[in-house]
Length: 393
Image (cartoon, rainbow, N blue to C red; front, side):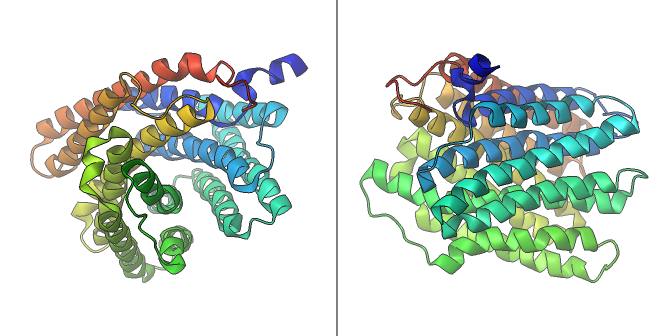
């Protein structure tokens, strides 16, 4: 066990989770796109959304935070046996959702929630030891992401459609909050460093609002079924969050970004996130925009930003050059842009032309999956081997 836990793949969280989440995202989105409808206990879009939010996106969030916190705090990273336990919990949660029994779904809920809460502990330990006060909120938000997962499972038996739908949105909103947190820390910084331009500074209240507002919206969504008067409140907060992110996206942009795939993938992903939040907020008043908003965020925002950040951070932490973009990854970025646009088209076609809707979302699924598989196969040998410079990590 000791020798196994010391293999390079267990050196930092990005190594197993970037690979596993990319592969799982490709497989699960193809299953959904071509007819898989979940199980009798987790049916239809509940399975699809659950796995894309807490299965794929959440795993990338955890991988990034547990990797970045070592740099932010100068503390040892989560690695070895603890990382193996986290990986086992995530894998168990993924496998168990395919078993059509309530006990299996309950076990998946427990494993998935423990995955997030133990990850929050791992991050919190480094943050506490270093007294890195600016990162306390990120630890709390990671714990809350796990809480949204646990609450969703509490309402699965018997299925309460209204609460479950809002529960899915709460998880998605929390992922958007992490996009706000990380985006505000790194997009302007990366742009400044690469283009040799002045970094755009943001007031602390503006940066914090992109995570604090999702942390406020998420619990309100679970309460909305019992207190319908919260629906417009949630709508206003989500619209405000979308506008704040749009403002930030515009402020950070420089035309030089368009020449750099490693930059434009982050800028476009953040812009999609902002638009998705805006349309989701409007969807609380005009329901026809809800699906458009969800998929602008889920495919355009999360899809582009996760593949962009996985590409970049894995290069840095394996001591490989950041530029130029690795062979094939530029194509993967464009495929994800195309997947985002096709899924947005599908959301519009849903109300106009059912056949066009079917073809659009299947096309989006294929584009999304191919993008993720390019990343997986390109990075597989790199993430299973030690760093090029021989340093730990």
